[in-house]
Structures are given as C-alpha cells and as structure tokens.
Image (cartoon, rainbow, N blue to C red):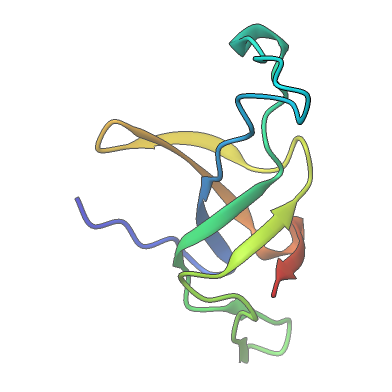
Length: 95
C-alpha cells in the first residue's frame, strides 16, 4: 500500500527501545516506555501559509527524528505500527 500524508504531516516508524539494561537485566514489555525516536517513512507536500504559498518541510524520508512522548496518531500500514504527526510535533533531527 502506498500512503502519502497531506500538507505538513509525516509518517514515522518508531525505533525499538532496548531489551536489556547495561547491567544485563531484561526489561519486560509492560515496563518499557514507548520510544520517542523514529525514522521518517513519508512526508507531505508542505505547509500552506496564510498568504497561500507553500512552505516545504525540513524533514525528508529516511531522517531519524526525536518527537514528543504523546505526539502523533498511531496507525497500521500493512500490519506495522506507524505514527502520523505534524512537522511541528518533531523536536529534532538526529545527525
């Protein structure tokens, strides 16, 4: 399935968190926090400003990003969980 978000929205796949601590303790699924890091899968065309011009997005597909803990809406694409969020919800691009 080919999905392209509209305007200033992006589709993000979460990067899985660590299964073990540095000391070797295995973290159960119930104790894990959802990661706030992900990879951009698809981006929209850009944000439409009040004067009608289109401002392109700063992120692109393949960028590794950080986002807010409660940002975005969870969706399933071909059985895999993704998030769809506005570019404003993105905190940083990881270099």
